[in-house]
Amino acid sequence: MHRKAALEAIRVLRARGHQALWAGGCVRDLMLGRHPADYDVATSATPHEVMNIFPETYAVGAQFGVVLVPVKVLGEAEGRGRIEVATFRSDGAYLDGRHPDSVRYTTSPRHDVERRDFTINGLLLDPISATPNTPHGEVLDYVEGLADLNRGIVRTIGKPEQRFAEDKLRMLRAARFAARFGYAIEAPTADAIRKLAAQIHQVSCERIRDELTKMLTEGHARRAFELLDETGLLREALPEIARMKGVEQPPQYHPEGDVFVHTLLLLEGLPAGSSLTLAWGALLHDVGKPATFRRAPDRIRFDGHVEIGGRIAEDLLSRLRFSNREREQILALVENHMRFADVQKMKDSTFKRFVRLADFDEHLALHRLDCLASHGKLDLYDYTRERLASIPAGAVRPALLLNGHDLIAAGFTPGPRFAEILAAVEDAQLEGMITTRDEAMGFAESNFARQ
Image (tube, rainbow, N blue to C red; front, side, top):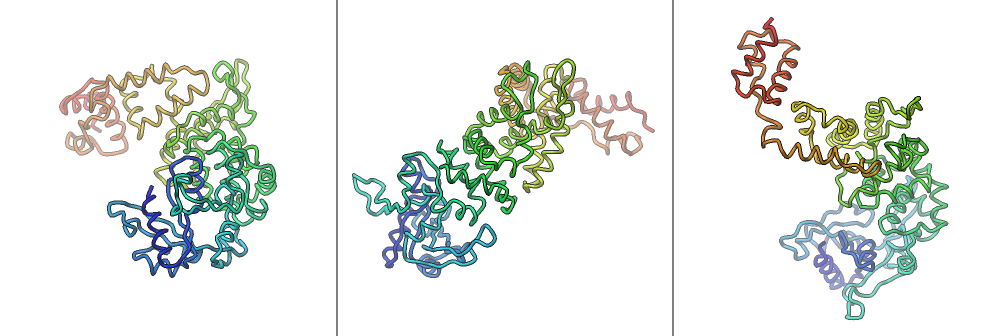
């Protein structure tokens, strides 16, 4: 998006006498025939000069040479968003494992590339020079990034240990990029990750969470988690998931293999663009099984794995600092995923309460993935959809016939029992036994004493 605005930024900067090029992921994606999600500009202009050239800029990372320019400033009157304009720079030491302690601006695009993470992200492009033979323009490749795109490898720019020492999150990013493009991680780069994997804890929980979420939702989650496992990052970032490896399951229900294999198959089924909550629900739905494994006389059992899994998932989600809303939905997916086993035996009130769980479509989607990753039978999934479709509009969550004030007015003594009375009245309403306020009051008076 915003290609025209990014092209206009190049033209304006050059008209003021500065070098300006497209940089990073957008160049990589264009070379791969993909549509870039955004366009970044690298320039010899300093942040101060960029802010003088473009009005209404946002100096969100000016200390690192980064300025955001609204697209409307660049001629997209109806557009929303910003173009990131970064000054060519070389970095000092990364003492905190995330940010350089000093930044030195430069007029050399080569120096700017040499401080970036991976060769496939180190390409620069001059879009102004586009011709019929080079429709995107001239590519500046100082690090053999084009060759690595052709070879299908993720390789650090320079020494792997140095690049990862600068920012430990790059280890996770290596796995994500390799999974996204179906690439291999170059052997020395992978060896460095294995050596330094334990240092991932120096990265903030929020950054780890966001990187893992991208892996889960970009459409290549299974491969990403296989790479995390192969490089030792899984046991460091998500030890709860690593513990699934080798945990047997009853073959009559899970012919696919152990809990980890089952979870990988679920992740393989996650389509690109899946919601964050569904993706994490899929990852964590069986997280309680390793702790509850038991080899009983009849078969392998995981008694209480849903309850234990909910507690484990809650600790994990709190550690990674998910929002309250995200945490609630993911936990609901974990804690309710086994209820589909009883869906054909549920009375109407129980079924209606079940299907009115928040974002129930995600519960359905998780159940479908769970089935396809094990026995492959979708009879309970189909039954749930058909039964839900047969319920008249508004009948799943009808307006309540009684409330506490009504009970007080009828002479009932207020207290904790009110919740029990109102729940029983609502169950009768959901079952179709009562439909009016008078019938509801009669039901309450017949089944509960006023005192």
